[in-house]
Image 1 (cartoon, rainbow, N blue to C red):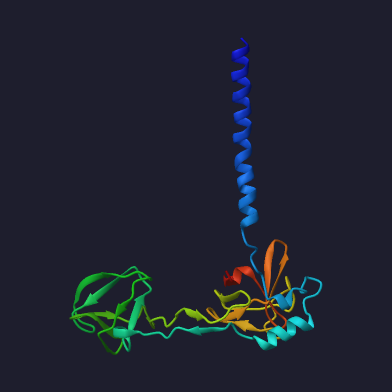
Image 2 (spheres, rainbow, N blue to C red):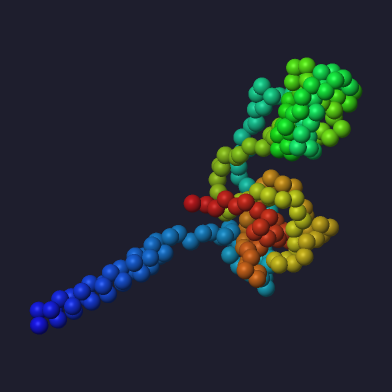
Length: 220
């Protein structure tokens, strides 16, 4: 009977030790993770109640743009070509401009085709197959490229939407007194303030924008 009780106590002890091990490991892992830098060290004094400091103003004046070099784009064989897409799911194709219908082209708004030649309001998109340009939209190949990071003292970001910034963290957009960004514009993140659960980033003098407008690169 004593032997059975000893086995039961041993089993309880092992179960307790196993339960403690994951919590201990998780705590160690959390402690080992580096803190994400949310701005420049010179802007550490920026808060919701203090959205501007002389030290941070000096940093923004000295480093107004991310220290990166844009990678040149090369359109290669598609340089100088015209492309269109149709605002329709299907498009009739003709054997000539205004001629006889020959087939139906499965288009869709995400399908781009090269224009072989144009004649008035018609475009040849396959040899001997012409489409009306009535529902067509011309598109240019993207020249968007990445960047080479030369030096990084703070996070930087790209705008993922066209938007105007705010004068204060959490404040309304102000296109007249603040500034506006176009999609893919680059900017430094000098400081970060959390307002109502969202991070607001200082991206220039009196220029605050919310995290949902940006794609951010953090120093490692």
